[in-house]
Image (cartoon, rainbow, N blue to C red):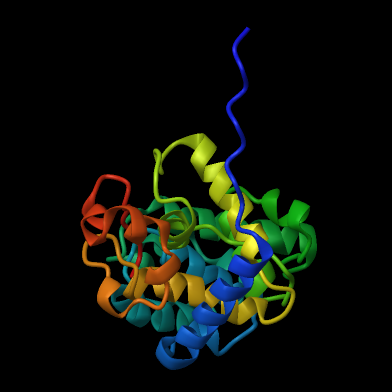
Length: 241
């Protein structure tokens, strides 16, 4: 009879506290000023999250402002013609994204009177809102305690807390979700999740991580085991920045 593989370990309480303190301190000094961090409007946060999928921040910024001038609310977007919406989206690419955003707007108006729901089950019922986007909306728009895991966050958590194994496997992804929930604080959730994303986008990057100035190196499993060179390997992952 084959044995079930041993469960991967989760960070213990002292390590969680250490990581939170260091990350939040880094964010206070290095966090980026971005327009979607100046609002708690669920629509604007959803727009930013959809735009940022597979797209760098500097490309999103001008389109984000243009989009909100054209479609300031779910109602305005729901009334627009779908092909017009795709044209306005240009040149961000991945045109399934504006179509999904348009469908979410229509669904929000039809089912919820133009107000995006805060409940996780309701958010996940929208085609185009997955586990990460639902967590981001809950955390950034509604102030709820919700974990996130995009490619940047997964890279940070994998490097700091795992450091070995196939980072792209389904089992590892589920484990990284567990880590994201485990390290999530009870307070300052908004700043913590924004910090995770910024840290992955600007410090713990896929191809040129700034290990020399990283506040996590002393207890980063990847750095301790392999040094900086591993960060350029196949498990590093690329994401928005």
